[in-house]
Image 1 (cartoon, rainbow, N blue to C red):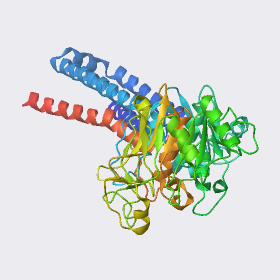
Image 2: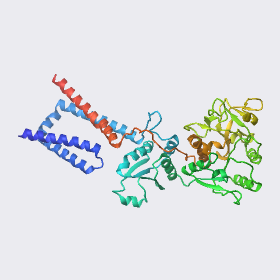
Image 3: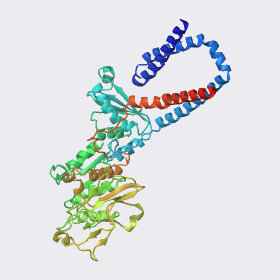
Length: 500
């Protein structure tokens, strides 16, 4: 009878330990149930120890018992080492994307933002259970790259008090919060999420101003409404300044951009531009070749007086250009050495671009922002472009040539010239790399190099994610199940050898 009760208790204890381990893996949010199961297991273990105390004492004083003790101690040390390794891996995670098209990855711009977050930032997801899993997978792309990003989940139906307290009005929403600021993101896209992190981790929003032009309102191919839309989505505040209606360019403008100038400004308007630049403002202009005579000679002259020569020519690169352009839309692969446009995904091309040269006075403060390939040249005879009879001759400049450049003061940009305007027109709106290039330069001009543009995270295929439950299974298998199995095998082998 006693043996039957002993075996029954042993079976219950074993079952309780197995159930408790299983509950830790699949029901971690119910600590009370887990605690009750393990309490039963521990009580059963104590009862069994009291029943078998004489056998246990005899066993522990024998050579066999001492060998078991040594094995247990060795197992415990191995367990501690594995636990330390897992803890370090958890605190400093490394993620590898083995898919051909980086389906499980963020853009390099987003990764740059994430890497610069040095204080704890919580990403609280407010969503129903139906949406939780997919959005949590998306947030894991962020949290896996920086342990300072902590993901939390709130079910609006269970915790309406938290929804009201944080001002959440839509589900799903993500609240990004650190010690200084908090914002609510309602679009489940990489662009919105990354820009949310940017806004939380900066002191103020950058302000970019533009000289008024009908092209800023033009929705056709030649307009720039697409660029303005991307800038707004990239955490910029935009202002259009009509130089005919204002006394001066607002001092709050961190950069003043002139896009595709068709002709020189009136003297009174141009004086406002000069004053803004002399007072420390950043001036950026996108140029383009003028085949019917130079109509912006005053603007070119001002640029040359301040260190940048903007030629009225066309850069040709037949080896690296868009198909069908006869070399007049060079693809650029060499950018700045400041880290502004490194690791751009996609091809950046400049359709009909002029060349930019620094004057001798600014050689030390000049930064090339885009450089054509060695097989290119700057064609000085524009009539050859029109006739299609392109020939390199003594009037032309052999490549590589700069097609975008900047003059800096104390390592910050003050004057920027880009040899092409249409690369960011509505016609090329689908070419993400062109717009990323331009937006990154604008981020540099406003002194917040942290900022960047990103694409929306649209997954055309289902990425491979390891869910929370699966990660727990892997963790407990590697830390508990596998070592215990190996220990059991070792004990069995030891007993067999001893008996033999």
